[in-house]
Length: 526
Image (cartoon, rainbow, N blue to C red; front, side, top):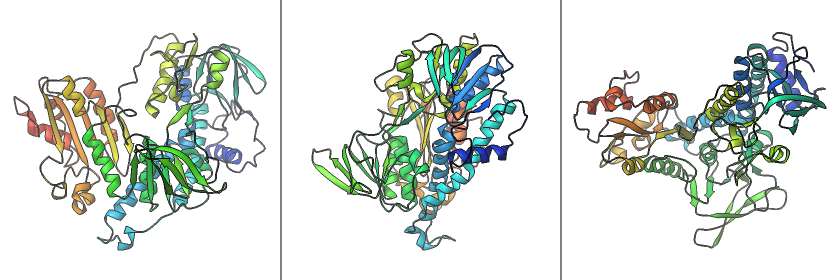
């Protein structure tokens, strides 16, 4: 199918029908047929062929085109955008929105207009999943339409690409030449090496979307990643008894950087209060079942014994592995022990002229890194030397809250600075159930009904320079603020400058509490 040169054709809804006919029903005549948005009258060599049309690849192509280059994106799926709108980040956010609403309903059970049955009510996770699926096609369609008609980037979809060498790619039987190759094929779930995973009832974030066809009654999550917390919080909030089995503690510093101890304790303790069972220090041994349907998980305990937990639904949250093997074979790019392609700060691999971006190059597996590494590669391909260190960043996850942190933890700050000043809520020495703060935006109901669950807040200063060096928050509506606050922190913002911010919400604690302390010549904790 050739779609090049016809503005806004296919239309948004035509794209939706086309994609759903390939992906959902499989009844489209285009199943297995390439979709070409290719200017065959342009005889120039491509500046880059980008293998993978997810966030990293799409932003690479758009940026390179904007700089006057010629890019070609290739993806095996019939849509651009990758796994994020299809089965990963977007449904995760849908589930997290649902978890927040369900959690509030349970906390408020029997109060106001919330009936008392909410305390023990179970809701359908299939209905939430299907709500996401009902809108997924339009998201895919928009990516295709925008990339074709607004960004004017060429692409070939619904067919794989085969790398011949660093300047040659084969697509649907045709050979294309290019100055550079950008590898952007992402990552998939790293499955544990245990028996029983082939049985019905074992899912990860992707197969939960594509394959789940029953309502689980009891859930076991293997792994302690962000996904374990996020999906576990949703399953539990939906009324499914949930157990998390993890080798290390949740939010471990081995997997997440700069996590403050107090923030971790608030999140993990809050999960336990809500009924999630968390078993740490384990080694999974086997997913049990009758060969068709799972019955539970057998594991080795921290003290060396064995135990079993019953479940009809096992969710794998043991991290992700990069899809790098084909490029190691074809190009000889260097990878680390986990298969992450090794790149420098320009995103160039060990093979000159070959770049890798997004999840292929290892943590953090986050949208901002995917998009920005795509633009970094594009800049360098077009002759602008540009480096980006992506190892220091604001981070977040969802439980039934938004959990956001950036900069140094209190422990890290005390190891680096002689004079560390902390401002936090709730304050030490007052029982949390008697202290309805931080009561941030979106948590007033919880603050009045269950004060001890209203959230957590801590900011960390170098007391001598008065500069902000870390911030940690559990609550609602704060992700947007932190993505800008991170920029200001890196520019050296002080407690005095934060105190000059005009708060739009009455209880926005950062400017409010900074203002209360900024008058002190010598800063003190609050």
